[in-house]
Image (cartoon, rainbow, N blue to C red; front, side, top):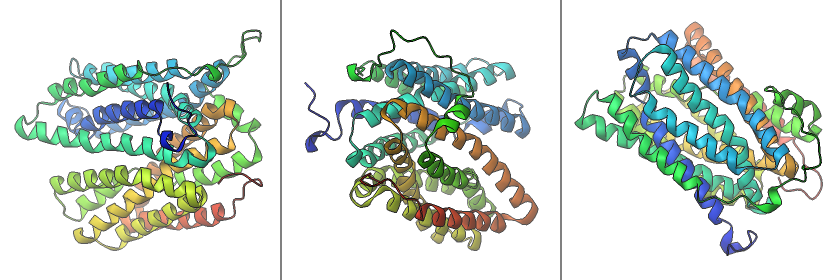
Length: 404
């Protein structure tokens, strides 16, 4: 029998362990293909424009669907079906690319993968939130993010090792990536739905949910939720893809091996720090740790704007790992503490949905500033906006007696 979740020895419960392992396996499969996907598509004859449109549409679909499926999960009181189906979709999409390279087939595979992410995100985060109290949410979300990011270390490492011995054998790599995806599916079968997660909806009329459910939730959400998420989304609007940091290194003359090595190093730092930083956030406050993460982020972008020295890039990426550990899981814990228990999936899904759209805008904006004014201007602009977000969130106050 599982011990109560409020027991100090059982903060990381069986459910949290399983969900974290599922995320580790899934991210391992995804990140195994992340470095080689653009190369594979270009070899198949597709242009950079096609690749950009493909990724843009896929990410937009994932972002918009997170709130929709989160809302459906909250209304039904069910979490597990969305988690199992979502991870299954992502796993199935990996080997699909090994069979055909037709444009519509590639688009279908990426759509299935991103739809899987939309299906599972809100429900999974709600399951994590239900497993812990306000006092230990940051460490629980931090533990999950750490395990998830460990997959981002193992996946590229496996891909690099395989391609070292079998250069250009990308289709076989897609089949190999199905193995951790299959392990993720099997692990979800070990999860159990909590009885107290079921809502008393049997005598209620079904409520229709539109695909743009996040707009409706935003209108009816509390002023506190709106204030917090507004600040987080302002930051997201200028928090461009990590690819730009890697491109900056490439621009300054670093070779591909060094760049991929530092990317793996960043994910390793992130994975190792996520849980201890979460513990610290629970002790001293979520807001304080999140603000420290913003400071680290701003320092990294100023550093990348002003230097082209590899010896400086290495500690900057270590600091960037701290930033990720201090913000990713902490932001979800912060939001879940504000949202009602029966709307956790919708609240987090709405935020992550808006965040996905903001990320697309951020990367486009950063690309424009880089093209028009240079990398230094793009990075310094991002750092300046981060400073404004720091000031805004510093003034954020919770209701009396709440944890923040």
